[in-house]
Length: 418
Length: 121
Image (cartoon, rainbow over all chains, first blue to last red; front, side, top):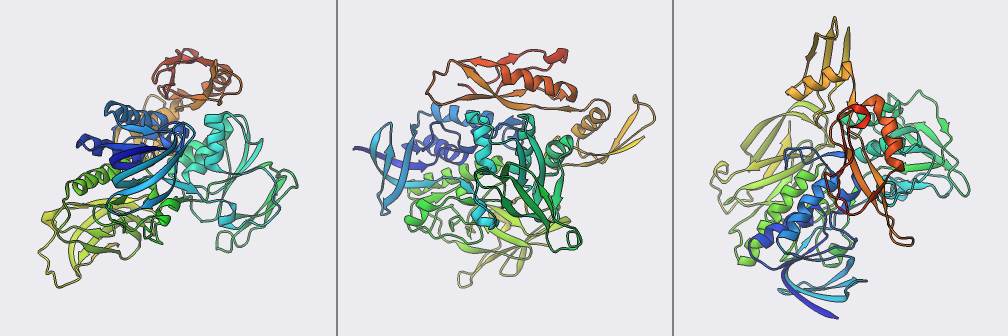
């Protein structure tokens, strides 16, 4: 067993982990990334389509190109990277944290560090999560797994495909499967509106005449060894109520039915989770309920743009540096979600600093307004051109915008969309 | 002539209204940035798309992990060239090492668009 000692260790070498690690290393602290895959980059490596980086790099990149810029930065800063190394449990969460890394390359590693950044990303919801009845044949994949098989491993998972869920991964896979020569019979979406971006409807479905069945579900799967077909049924809404079910002969079903933060390690370390996000509850520094353990990226909440993951994770890296320096905010107050907001993060704000918030709307609305109140007093009112649940909203609350607060009160910050 | 379009240049997805009497005089409305106007015009005249895929790599010995190199066209490609490009790139074997941005197929079908690697391996 090898002993390794760092100021900070980052668990997960995707976009979040790399961005946080670079910031920590830039400040001169010793820092390492532990990654279970054979390469850095995380999910970006299989997202070979373009559309990444418009905010952060002001240009349009593919996933691997976006990842490569950070992989290069990690190399340039001389960070220690442990690939093919899996963290199972965080053993000690005291002032000196410790955990084991299991690796086919390095053997058993024992890490000791003053702080940990959780950056494990998220995983896909599967058939069990949506409870689709029917037989249990082969040929049912989550969309992201199929994406990996096609793009990285070079296997094509079927010939006639039905996709469940119209999120962006499902849409991107509809085009990808068409471009590898398979037939995509349709995309089935339970909601009356598509979950993905409009431009992906155009360039991934309309371009190939792939039907989108809104307000429908896959209500049955059949086939003994392999999927042989599925039944598509309308759900009881105005749009779907009067229509009949129909069957599609397919050999493969791809599920694009949402993502959940992957917090198995966090839970075992005693980190308190937020039921609205599936990620950790964090204070204004993105520090979890366990002192010295931070979280950023998709393990904290599922993002729709990697650019926001990078931004959040760089801030997290800066917060880790402050923590290592022994600087802590003097006071922090709670944040809560108000009207039409599913969640707002972080769960605390620092009235003596600049705060950056991310929120998930519950409604589709044009010409909405973001309204932020502290103790009922309005501190921000801002026009939003268009909001919808699949697009995260971010905003900044600067120190100057925060009125003087009486410490005897709760000073809760409430964020709503009107 | 009139056509309703949705701009795919960025995630906003502006709804465009294209109208023209002859193809040298196309008016685009509803765009929020200059890219929308370019997209709308091209979509009416000659639609183009960026193609992304992965190619086999040469020289991966049997029994080792299958590795593919991700690729893209360095500019949107006229749609009628997409199918033949896909046929070509799936039959290619890319010798390693390869650098991001390296041209793997130059001037596809005389369009001036190149196929480039998007990952260094």
